[in-house]
Amino acid sequence: MNDNTTARAQRKPTTRVSTGIAGLDDILCGGLTAQRVYLVEGSPGTGKTTLGLQFLLEGAAEGQPGLYITLSETADELDAVAQSHGWDMDGIAVFELANDNSLDPDAQQSVFHPSEVELGETTRSVMEQVNSLKPLRVVFDSLSEMRLLAQNPLRYRRQILALKQFFSLRDCTVLLLDDKSNTPDQQLHSIAHGVISLEQIAQEFGKERRRVNVIKMRGTKFRGGYHDYILETGGLKIFPRLIAAEHNRDFVARVSSTGASAFDELLGGGLPSGTNTLIVGPSGIGKTTVSVRCLLSALERGEKASFYLFDEGLATFFARSAALQMDLRPYSDSGQLAIHHVDPAELAPGEFAHMLRDAVEQSGVQFIVIDSLNAYLQAMPGEHFLTLQMHELLSYLNQQGVTTVLVLGQHGLIGEVRSDVDLSYLSDTTVLLRFFESNGKLRRAITVIKSRTSNHALTIHELQLGAGGIVIGGALEGFEGILTGLPTYRGATPMMLAGSDEPR
Image (cartoon, rainbow, N blue to C red):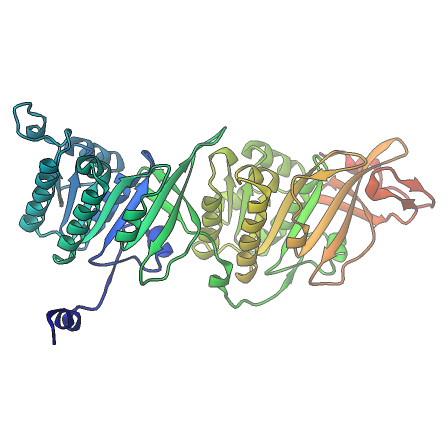
């Protein structure tokens, strides 16, 4: 038996180590394989240094010594980064290659003037530190300087291979940080056991968007595609892309009242759990009021609820609801209702999905309202991505037994109206609201145009905003063309009294 066969037979079973970032561990399905070399690439500002520090701090918390080797930043700069996040660097060794001696003009070599001698000296210094400190976790920052020192692609590749072999023989798990160029370094990709790519995308307005993509990970399963993340005080917070199929759960199906008996009849009984209802209509028609009526009914039954408000200020929202005798403040003050005012300019789509998951899995929320999808669309890079995101999100909520109400505004008031995006095919129930004119007055109409779970009414009814939120009249049998906004009256259907329509 040769030496290679003996070494393979004596090899320890592979173990997984945490990166220190819960979302990244989730994407990697458990973390990184120990004693391997990984490449973390990204342009300046994406958070590579922060990720490296979190990786080492996690090791320190588990009793694994860590070493940060820096060619691009000083030890003081690293301490400043750690302090900005509230971290203690006492358990992490920092080896600064770009020290005062390297800046001495009388020195024989300098990391800032690449040569073959300097590359060898740099590599030798790294090896000496590792042999001396015997770390189990190492961050090497950054390969950009190594590439400059090498001057030659062949010499650079050989040095990286030498370092990889050196670290593997010393049971080190290593992150190599590298600045991302326009053309990926395929040589590095082939050498590394895994490649994690960080990206920062500047928006024309609002907060920049950051996302991570695991390009390669040998021998382990991982979640591919892009995952949003934010860089905040406390480090990187990564939001794994939601995959609804991974979250199946059994629940007891039930049909709950909306709080308005006439609306229940239109829906064929009420709102079933594990379904979503899309309320569509032009601005000012009463979409939010209808959704609040359904929400209040759920709160009165004792259910926990969350309301995600994109378009309206909290003070206006509470005041308008109270004016319609649907006071939500007691439920908000008690914690039964969580109202989140969301700024779409500051929101990553993955962050929003993560908010909903936390509400369902950690807070036990059973009823969710999203008002409105128009503003949420502004946080997405395009209509196609919104449709895919909403498909996974709604599938997930349905599988958790959550009752979801979605609000979608349309452009135009009378006549032809248009939507920013068509999500009707994703909804289980679609409620359509329209303005129409009768006897010189502007009136509202409501109808249910789709329901996957019940035999809903096919009639169109007058809608008024009044005491208790909404008042629904009888079927408008004497009208034709209500949904166009320009109806023709051919019967004797009485309109509801105007006095009940005064609260707005």
